[in-house]
Image 1 (tube, one colour):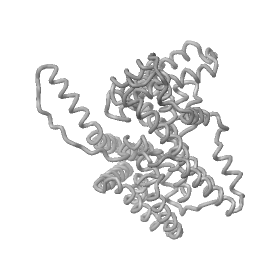
Image 2 (tube, rainbow, N blue to C red):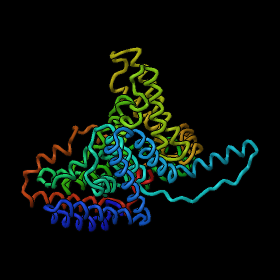
Image 3 (cartoon, helix red, strand yellow):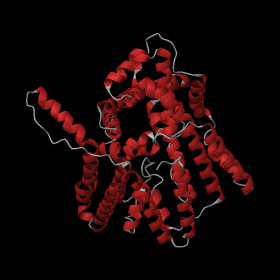
Image 4 (cartoon, helix red, strand yellow):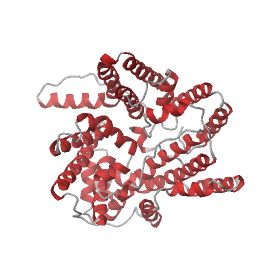
Length: 466
């Protein structure tokens, strides 16, 4: 059940009206939202609802044990909380990859063995709700958030359908206090939520889908059939596609949550205007980058032990961040590229200090093209296709894939990053006092326009696979 579909629209309207009919009975409201979230997740595979429940019970129990037995709280955190969450993630996401690599390694040494290769279905969004659980038990251990008052709250924290399958990763310290109080829907929240949903629908169904189907997918499938212009356009197009696709999901998730009375943190902040890789990760998938910082980089030691230690820790963090995205060598190479560039940036700052060595515009262009180089590794199914894309950038050939419409969408998708910051918030602020009829007509017209210009069908969101 995808956000930009009629089925989800009907589901959400039912959830919206039922939830607000229970607004004075917060316990029943939360129970209803939990059941609705399980129903939403069951549309992909009902069997994995049990995994959601198991994961929530595990993290609730660990949080309670940490609070009740502070003398051994680290043992509960590491031995049960973090280890069990990572074991679940590793089994579903990485078991096949590591078995295949082990088999290849044994074969190279002449020790061919039939290893137990299982056909494991990857649960949608497992990385997101697993990281959600880890952050909860770690924050309880650190004293940053008290243990949840009930198992229901932890279950809803991890299963709440707006962010369940592709984030943002909402911290317990942000969401649990909201569950404690009866939500209220203000005019400002409703206006902002509706605008985010419309903006997300436009980015996903009009820009991302068109670029994906008619440019990125065919070029990445067979780079040898295209010349340099088409391949370069596909690389830039994928940069726009993945931004519009993923930020659209985040926008719609934030907007849907707002219409239900809850606030999610911002997940993107014009990432392609970043002038360094460090700045890029402060703007791209903010909930993940801050998670990696707080729960991986800082526990590794952060920058407390000097420059070299900081460089090593940020490199390890980015490599593991690449592995988080998928069990493939291309994702490891993508993380290695991002980690290596951040190490170079840190060493450069150590040498030149606060002096501005490179003009901002040059920094933005260089950073963007390094990110695009990384996107080739991220999108290609293997190193062979990635190398074919890079080699094709030097091949002269006719332009067969890039059309004026696609060029317009690519340029427009990049130009979004130079809109006024918080443009949607500003528009919502101006519209919140508009008459309800006027606001309804504007939102309705926007939905109809998007429906009229978008291509047929809705492709799954890119980040569903993670």
